Length: 395
Ligand SMILES: Cc1cc2nc3c(=O)[nH]c(=O)nc-3n(C[C@H](O)[C@H](O)[C@H](O)COP(=O)(O)O)c2cc1C
Image (cartoon, rainbow, N blue to C red):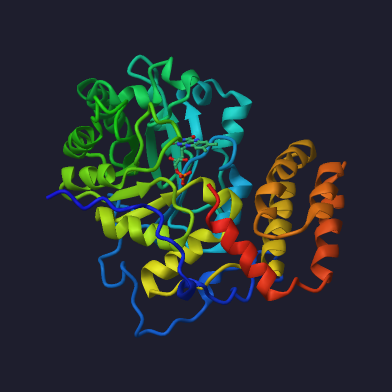
């Protein structure tokens, strides 16, 4: 039976509004004290409560909320930041070109970098059946990853022109033969997963059939972005398409992906499509703490609400610290200048803070600027809440 397709974004009702959360605290180590530490009324249950935990082959993720791979965003500092905010079941690297990693290309190696604090971690590879994907898979397993993911959804020309990414959706038989070779190279050391779109276009909705075939050869989970390649990021995510992939597979988990901007969106996707977990990308770049809110709603039936002003500032502060720990100064400056506007959407009127980031010639200046803002009294709660609600409804 087809799951009913409902509108993705439930309108935020007045009674859905909650008091802002108390804010993230920073431990002595500088690490953020996870929002998940909050205690919950045990009688409350979310949509995922009582379900068996997610099982991806031999790997059991701690939650069913995943950070999606995002080229240019999901580097080591950002993955660590999201983990520290809480709720993250798995975070995956940017997509990595299989030839570049094997050639030891410095950028590819930087993107593949991980450490003990970055756990559990997935690594995503792309390529086609003439590429050394099996060899790169073997290399990736040697880096201590928990999951190996194959990109079958990237719509970018640079990737598709080389027959990787979304183009793998077009010929499921050929793709499955490639995946069999990858599985043989991995030899069961880590689970292999695939991230798909619904198909190339409306006339070629191969996603469900491909998912079924991938399961039959041993792929351990499917992440499905509910759009076709032709749609790129336009239009609304199609929940009925995600539901078809859920129906197509027998036993492996399916993670629904696309347009999740609030805990209520995530719950709605799970309820409507029957998917086992969710994966989010763009919204996490604006609100790295969103995974924690989603996790709390799915498990405990309660959304702790938007983070307060000082909590958001502490997240930004931590992002600066993590960039400084892992990146050279020039790169940190570049990344943080580009991210501040995303964070600022949740902060209200912080033009001087954005200016300070834009003009900073050293990350020390960024730290000083945030600490100055942390010393100011937080804006009135009503202003903050209307700002955060505006945030939730943004595309
Ligand atoms: C800037 C950007 C980079 C992305 N890079 C990747 C990638 O490297 N690998 C991948 O599988 N998907 C990539 N995606 C797709 C996302 O993982 C995700 O499927 C898509 O953005 C829909 O989810 P969202 O609505 O939560 O953003 C990227 C998306 C964006 C916006």
